[in-house]
Image (cartoon, rainbow, N blue to C red; front, side, top):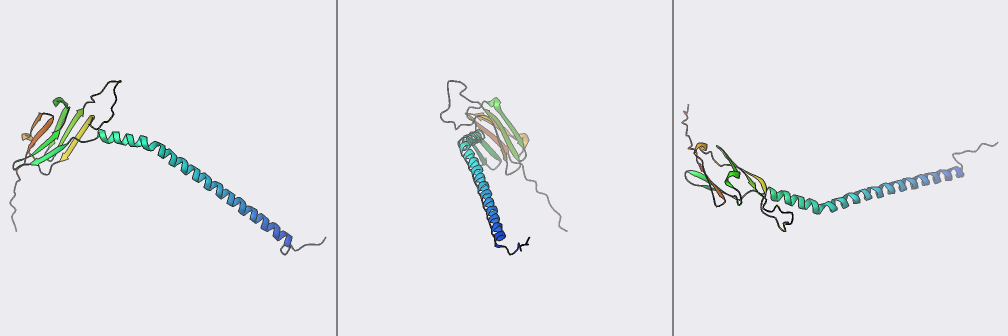
Length: 172
């Protein structure tokens, strides 16, 4: 038998080109399938997010409403700081007032007014549940002289200013 030079044989070269072309086609098809699968997965994720957007927005809205702080004014006079806090619907015994030299903390419970199964809120903006209002004061106060009055749903706390002590420093 006669040996053929495979390297220079045009038939072998054509077969190699066809195999290479088939491999390229298979790679292109695999890449296209991967791309389609990735796009489908991404579309499924986006669709799921869009489906949950309204529910998530409502949950965040309810969360923010529950955490609203009571309206507060802080007034400085010559001798004291006066803090006024609106606490509508709160009973005096449901207020916990904590004071330190440089901060004030008010904890309250706003009771839910509608407890009936036959009723539902059409609009809900007022706070319900536990609320904590903490504030750092701009100066130190005399904690043992603090006075608090709760009248007409307004808590008024008078915080006498601590006298600044001036220390004389010797200069050398």
